[in-house]
Image 1 (cartoon, rainbow, N blue to C red):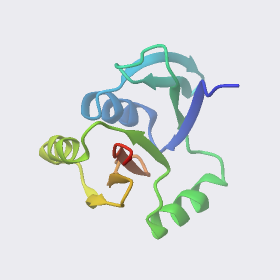
Image 2: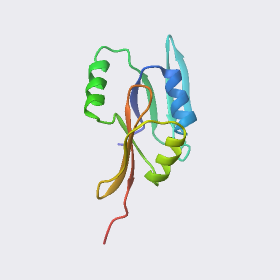
Image 3: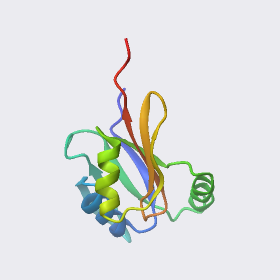
Image 4: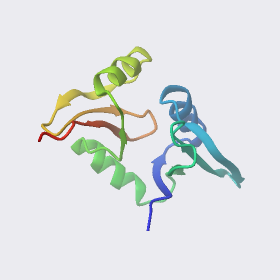
Length: 132
């Protein structure tokens, strides 16, 4: 068993695509029109054959209360691994990304949280090397 696809609900698929590609640096894998929406996925340029992130339309009635609760409690909807949280924080901050939590050492990792402009909080995380 392996993870091939996961999703994040977004308010506007085209705006989300622009943010996730132009700002975060992901690349479009699928963009298939489906009526008013699309099957719209992005992947990491470091793993183009790896897991896809579906930019899922947020129109279902259950999505708003779910996302509102996550945002209110400061809980990220999605997490991404990075090599260096401080460097990624500086890069994204320079592009105008709004962080709700700056780089924070949590013992086994360093993390930061930002707003994806599409209705979600996103956590970036770098694991620290294991101590022997």
